[in-house]
Image 1: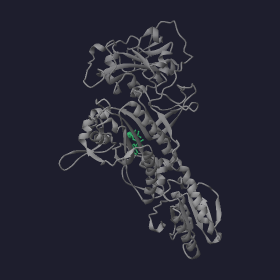
Image 2: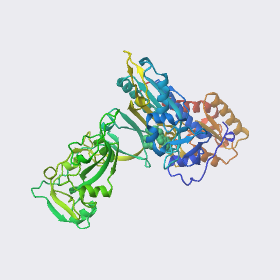
Image 3: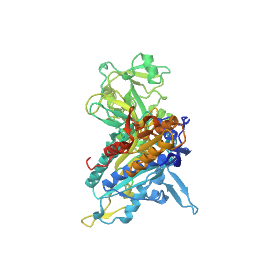
Image 4: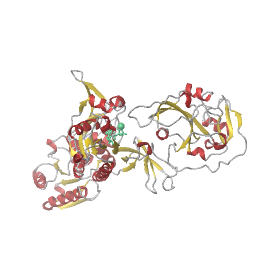
Length: 605
Ligand code: ATP
Ligand code: MG
């Protein structure tokens, strides 16, 4: 391609609303433009790189036997009613109506569409397992689209869905995806941290997220450098760390006046001691808890519901007093899992006052018998503690957890932070911010059951298939490649993603220089090299700056001064080679092909 015949749309200025490198560079190098909030257009150069990311993902999906489908992006709302997600998806899902008032959904994901397709085709176990995928448009009405295509509203996702006769088959295909994803990210030159999210709360079936480190990441990762433990902070566990400075006491519990002292900080200052000596007590409201609370304090007033199709009876609404060491925070995701609730929130001031018989700020476990008490493991190792006194302006001293109060349930419900002790190896964690690039998940029969998918097994018995789902963001992966591969002058593309592999820059596009440049251009094209010829009538400095910004891996400079040589420079190196004109084609071809070979699909894992 000649530069004069494509769209080189570089910008010298950093666009105002772009704060991260990939967003700035995609705009500045003319890969991308903004059409609206969270809505973008790839320009020709950007689309070339985008297509290469897509192609790698497609190749690895095909290699594990996934079948490519092409469902419409707009799907009937009816399918979402069948799965029950019409109600639960919330504002993130864009719903539209057509001229005959039919409800439609702009796909934010496609479990429903694929499950409906499979439902119609599936009759026998002999057809299973089957895995379908698409690389297609998604729309999510993100509240705060940001960082360019990292979090857009419209974006492209590779999403795959697998259907199985049994758990072993799901496990097998899931493992294939786990290794295909590793290959994909390796071929994209992306350093990912696979994070296992295999918690009891999800039934222990299996889920893994592929994260990239990013200072603007939306997730916090807890990592152990020593054993490789990696978890999202929502799920991370840590070993218990008793505070050895807390010594058991024989003293009886003592009330003290603490006028206007409500927060842990105020209390620390008032008593001149550290937050580790306090037991913090918070009252939570839980929705749809499946715990058995019949023997719990305060259970008489709770309504318990048994619903057909639901494994266990549940309490639409219940309350808990939750205790944790004063210097720690409660992780609501872990707490929700412990109390088997679908949702959790801090109780209102009114509810707190009703349960504790005191204003907010004086809750404590001693003498609290209006609701079940849940303690974090940290509390089990505490001694001689300070707690709220269940009266206005009163706290209690010398509280011994097992002596002075009992609890309904204990567990690990703290938010793990850097410096906590690794659950696996006892070393300390560090933490980092990350962005999710991909996610693989064993779904079970949630969709196949609610949408009535069935097949006949070997014995002629009707069964429900089990299901897995697997996603990768194409745009976010592309942006992440730029995050990982750029310098102060622009993008430094890996050879296999670059919009063009080689650029030929004649100092002046006329006379002998034009002839050499044209010859080399044609020669390289015949070798199958993707080459751009910068034939624009611009100063050499401008051309160099543009091509560095765009990040083309190999630059061939044709200048009178260097003849009979041309200067060949790789974008990721500071030095250049002088190569005889007649050897330049082979030299460049070898460079490109060797680099490509490193990223090619291979059957070994
Ligand atoms: P996030 O927590 O970042 O919102 P998610 O958990 O909603 O991600 P999934 O539903 O698992 O994401 O979607 C699969 C992949 O789609 C993500 O790993 C990510 O790469 C991509 N993705 C999700 N939302 C967006 C978005 N708004 N813009 C670009 N890519 C996205
Ligand atoms: Mg999301």
